[in-house]
Image (cartoon, rainbow, N blue to C red; front, side):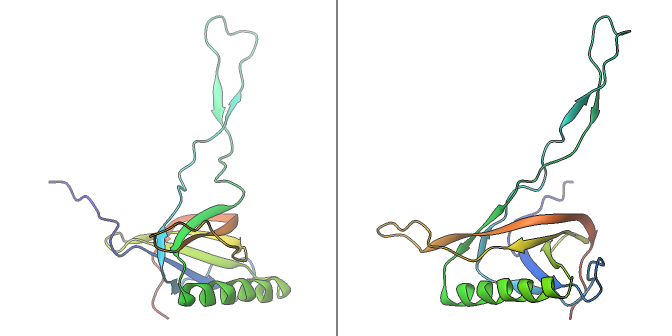
Length: 156
């Protein structure tokens, strides 16, 4: 029997560090109105380590992964979202002055762990607008530390 999961109920959460260089384990709050989360599973670069003794095949080792310079989170562009995102950007700026980072967690309800990364949220611009469509926007975060999978954050 398989235990496939649904995307229903997945949240993007954020929390400012209280100790520089230490990912918080509690105190995360949900960023509402998120519609899509980008891929955090990049293919690693490969590094050619073939030496002159090889006669048929090249050899490689795994190199660095690149999640991108600024990753986009799709959101419904509501007043609530815009206000919360502006506050997040301000909180990041405040954290930076204290040499602290802003951490984000992608929390999947039926998994025992969450995916963590630290990053810099960018101020919102104006997204494309179309006739007879929901107003949506892409909010960007430039990741600067990938924490990866760890236990879900505890409630505040």
